[in-house]
Image 1 (cartoon, rainbow, N blue to C red):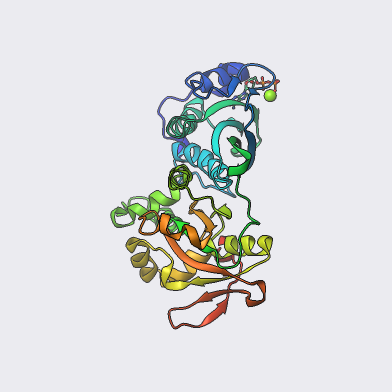
Image 2: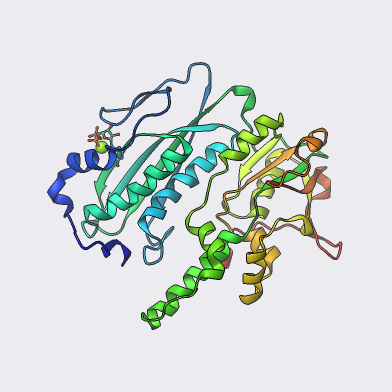
Length: 347
Ligand code: ADP
Ligand code: MG
């Protein structure tokens, strides 16, 4: 097991609860002026002045959301912050604070938690968010991580899921499906390893896919880019469950239909190769594979010139009146109804 790979193991009882909290949180400097009080009292104090606060929370459970036989703890720490920041950016807000709670069994030594917090610290450092609190407790089995992210934005900047209008363009950042194929590769190698632990996997050609699975980046850069371009999306969400399910959420909440154009869906060449090897349809993987943490949003047609040609953004379709329904326009120019098949459908 990965959490056992350290040669030196400090038992959790050597530090005690308060010693452990101190030890894990001592290297987290405060960088946001809105953080008036962080770790160390009964509660954190955050001052947003006339900005609005945005709050989002996620729970990650060992064996359900992650498998420690192929997810390094440092990556897990990083990703647990990313998935939460992604929700804040999806509201067109900037994340400023996180609260991280952990439940651990005593099979984890202090060194394992240090690795976890190294990933959390890296994420906080790169994305400029302050760790301002949490809770630390024991579990009978496995590791549980709960992260709550807090962000801020002026009221007029906040974007909901329900603002898409007929004729709006549908835009997505980055490329889709790669995180799902990264998971397929990791799971396959894990099975091979169980049968023959001496086999050294050659993962070179899958590097991009594995990175997308293990070390996703939340798209703070896109929120900043849209602001710089003067584009205010009409609806937005992040892609955690797959493009089709997220687009259906936007359409349902906005009371509109859509036409999603298959050939416009952005795919990385590595993903196309891996899909051929696994005999999966790359379109299906992009539609239903999850965990890409890209931003999906709609913009007024008059904003098209502002985003045109930007390598980070792809226009993948447009919004229609509700009576048209939600359709995928295939390469053969057929309209087929979009289905909400989250990534669970593949398992
Ligand atoms: P209480 O007994 O009031 O719940 P704790 O002793 O659990 O307080 O926590 C003391 C301080 O340490 C609080 O500021 C709390 O938010 C913070 N804290 C506890 N666990 C963590 C953690 N895993 N990460 C960051 N901060 C933590
Ligand atoms: Mg507590």
